[in-house]
Amino acid sequence: MSTLREIIQDAQARKVAIGHFNISDLVALKAIFEAARELNVPVMIGTSESEAQFLDRGEAAALVKMLRQEYDFPIFLNSDHTHSLEEVKKAVAAGYDEILFDAGKLPFEENLRLTKEVVEYVKSINSNIIVEGEIGYIGSASKILTELPEGAALRPEDFTTPEQAAQFVRETKVDLLAPAVGNIHGMIGIGKDPDLDIPRIRAIREAAGVPLVLHGGSGNKDSDFLAAIDAGVAIIHINTEIRVAWRAGLEQGLRNHPGEIAPYKVLPDAVAAVRQVVQARLKLFNKVV
Image 1 (cartoon, rainbow, N blue to C red):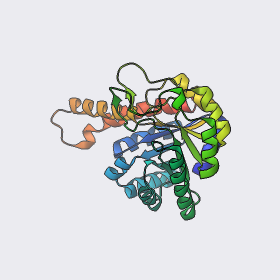
Image 2: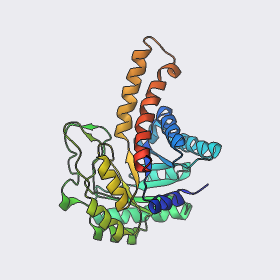
Image 3: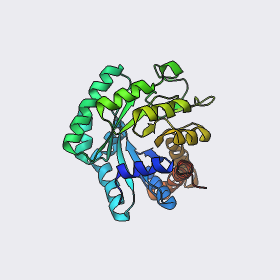
């Protein structure tokens, strides 16, 4: 089976993107895996620090590894938005395939210094683990937003620049880069999410020389996704959309089975709702007609 690094390289070559979806329970994992298998496309699972604390890093890694080996299927696990070296060490020990070290809210020079330390540590333990860095703060909550995140890079003058990207990658030696290009975490409850700066994505990809990752994908336009992929984005993160689907499916399951206490009779509606969203996104990202 191909490695994650090879899967990413193949996505770039074919001008498609790998879908990345976060989980904190087996309902989401089951739905995501079923959707990816049905389409026969690679998929990435993510756990943030809070999600990993709830699910347990070791259990998450064991589950994904089991699915990969038992089904001979390209499913990989990312430690999403990891904010400290301590948490990075936990993810490495658990057996994660990728680690996103997120110091994007800090001043650029401090972000660079800390990310470099993380890359050096991870590669000293296991050079096969992919390390991703992030430049620029785009909010932190995967939820329906009633207002734009305070301090987020929402104006063009606050976005990641190609010059920053080139320096950051050169000095930290990250494998992937997540820039701020008009994307935000969460979904705007009223109105629409900001448009992505496609020319900037293309310029950053050329300057950085590594594949780009688009965070905060929930709520963006399909046309922006496709343009971003063509401009150099190799992985797209979706979380809020599947959380919304999870809740709607769970509520539907409870309505369909009033008084039921068996989880396996109620939860299939949640699985189906999440699977539908994931499948639609995977079709778009992989340009499946």
